[in-house]
Length: 97
Image 1: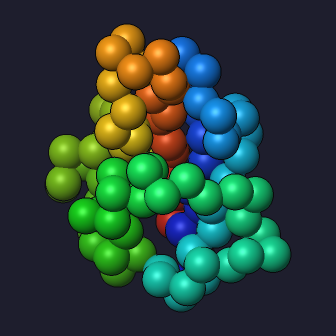
Image 2: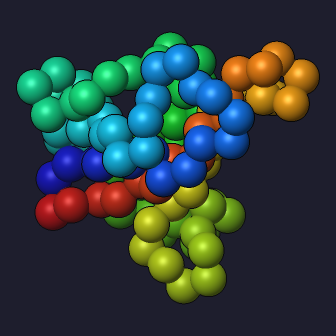
């Protein structure tokens, strides 16, 4: 089992991520550095509260992270790009068995 966290949207200009970049967590908690494109420490704070539940099979909808009945979870980094001239990055988190 793994979680694949993919960059799906960037508002503003992110100096780290590009659309399509991914972070891969094996067994739900091991960062796979060979499969991961890049990691920004600011984005980790947005992922941390949810990765354990999602890796254990909790449905994204149950924790308020789904779009409709989707199995994918959606989170975004904490950069308020309108105020910092940075980039707010949105992620899609998928559990792969």
